[in-house]
Amino acid sequence: MPTMADVARSAGVSVATVSHVLNGTRPVLPHTRQAVLDAVEELGYTPNGLARSLVTSRTRSIGLAVSAISNPYFTEILQGVEASALEHGYSLLIADPHDDPVHELRAARLLHERRVDGMIVAPSAAPHELVAHLARHAVPTVFLDRLVDTDAVTGAAGPPYFDQVCADSAEPTARLVTHLAGLGHRRIALVAGAPGLSTSSERITGYRHGLAAAGLPHDERLVVHGDSTAEGAERATEALLSLAVPPTALVTANNAMTIGALRALRGNGLSVPGDMALCCFDDFDWAELFSPRLTAVAQPAKELGARAVGLLLDRLGAPDRPPRTVRLPCTFVHRTSCGCPEQPEKGTRS
Image: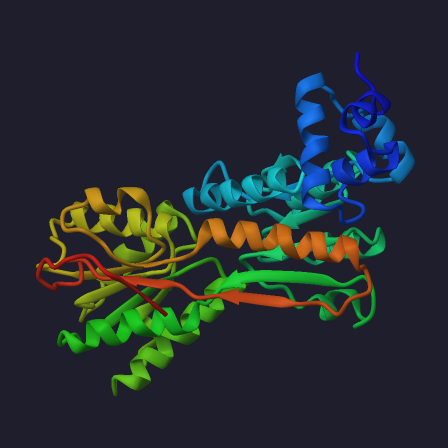
């Protein structure tokens, strides 16, 4: 089995240079780096990850805790995380916290026991125990998609620091509302996500801003929580339809709830957009297959995953740097479920 010394001899460099190329511990001239990589390929050298981790106290692995199995949006984020992690020479360990505080704490402990260098976590609506655990063990962590008031949980603004990355939520939701209002709708409802999530509260804020911008009153009865699930959204939409004066337009706050709302509308014999105009937060591959095609806000899911990895690697390189919160813009995808005629699809940033 070839050794690092064999690679160094083949490339005409020192063993230390080979180590710097493979571990990314020091910049190396491009032609030297390529010579090392060519030698690695030619010899079939495989680094001893266990030995390296014992020397560096790093495993070059990242723990990812997101509900990827049950949510297509997080599946796209996972793709972005994985591609970026592999690009930087990191492996990925994945746990599904099921959006449940007990499960997410268990997932974090499991990943920590596997000696990951850091974690990327999409927190639940009640992440206090999770954040306390991560802070107590000084685990480098990036919170993804949902923001957390970590100072309130840890009780201090000092180390350990947590970075966060998410998409804009309020302004894009306001845009969906003003778009529907511009089509003549005066009773526009919102099926919001699970209470306690920052995405839920921000989209409710955006909904209210959209109503205000359109000169429409805010009616609390038109805001219902679908708990971020298809089943919850179906129940919430049924409640809206049972109002004495039901809405004529609906905004759903994530992809799973869009499915539940459509199920409720179909069960009541209502068509979209003939009986109910519909706009949704989250675009997904099958939005094109619906009839009518869904007008949606598309989040940059893969980019969010890649940026989370970048933030985590920056934190690993500089543990005491100030914490950062990064927000990425969304894209408004104009289709026909809102009641507009068919037109060439063109997304615009929000």
